[in-house]
Structure formats: C-alpha cells, structure tokens
Length: 257
Image (cartoon, rainbow, N blue to C red; front, top):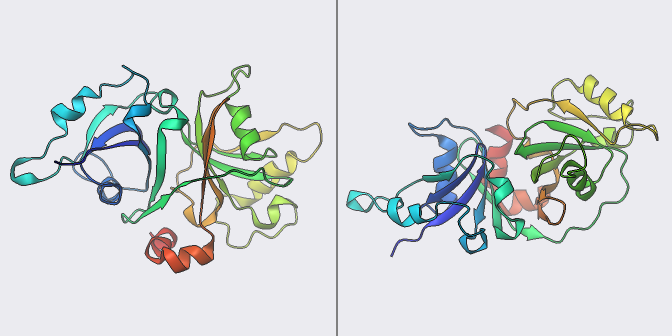
C-alpha cells in the first residue's frame, strides 16, 4: 500500500497531497516541472486528522492521488490554493521543510519557544499569507500577536515568518557593523531600524514590500514561527556548527544556490 502525504506549501500557498516523501517532494517542487517554476520551497507536513471537518476536499486524495501506470507515484494533487493557512489549525502542522533552489531539503521539528531577551531591533521575512520584509522592535511572539490582532485595521488571521540576523544593526542601526548582510539597500534598512528606537515610535515598519531575492536562509536567526492570537509554534533553525556537521550538503546549497 502506497503512503500519501499532505503538505501545506508556503511558496506559493497551497494544500497538496502527494505520494512523494518530504525529501522527494522538496526536490520535485523546487526544481520545477512543466506545471510550475523552480525556486526555493517551504512547506509543512499536515496531519489530516487535525483539519476541520469538511474544510477541504480530502476525498480527492483517494480518488486522484494514485500511482500511474508502471507504479510511478503521483507527485501532486492540489486540494486548495486560497486562504489555506488560515483554515489549518497550528496543531495540525507537523515538521517544517526548507528547500534550496537546487532541491536540497532540511527538516525542522517544533521546539520549545523561550521569549528572547530584549533586543532593540528585529528583521522578519514573512512568507504566508503575505510576503514583505518587516523591521520591528517586537520579539517574535509579540510580533505574531500584533500582526494577527483583529482589532487592528491591518492584520492577518495567521502568519508564518522567519527572523533574520541584523548583526550590529540590532543594537546600533546607525553605526553598527553589517558584515555580510545580503539585504538590498542597507542604508534604507538602517534608517528604518533607527526610526523604531524612539519610545513613541511605531513598533514595526515595512522594509521591503516584496522580497525578490528569494529566501535568506544563510542569515536566519532563531528560526521560523507560525501562529495567531491563540496558538504559536516555533521551529528552531540549527546553528552554523550543527549545519556544517550534520547538514553540510543543504548548508552549502543554501549559501550558493
């Protein structure tokens, strides 16, 4: 009997059934096919038992996610492409998979989240359901709660984002060192971060409306976060020593692909 997997893709957003395991699916989804373009991929494995009854056409899995003649696995069956994240409870999300442009996949498990010590500035790359880059003086849990707050005129029901390194800019946006930071227009980033420091300033400000340079894997700090007003999950990103020792192929690809 063939195993069927259920994935929540973030780039682009979609709920997908597949007979490919996560590593195989990551390679297929990142390297491209006739029906979609290539590029980095990020996706969660989803527990079907955790989905709200009747929310998605799960009956199509048995009907359409079947092996092709000769036993070739069915690579993908799309079950939803609109407002998918907001309809999947955080509790139904399993491991997170990060895929480089050349199809190398890194698996992240949920970790205990510990509030970060005070830092004056943070930089977040949002992935779903919106995808700007945002500077903020809020630590990750506070940022999640703020952006999903329905009392605010601009909010989303649920969010997935990563935190990015700022090096010396986190404490001193004006004069702090920015060695090897790959973000575009660093002078503008310094100005945005500095504008957050006054006590009466906004807590968050847009840095980039849309990220055109892909996923900044090599400067991820902390990890990936998904949550809303009630639930929050943290996926810790390995430190460089662990990446070099345990995930060298993926890490090399993430820096060069």
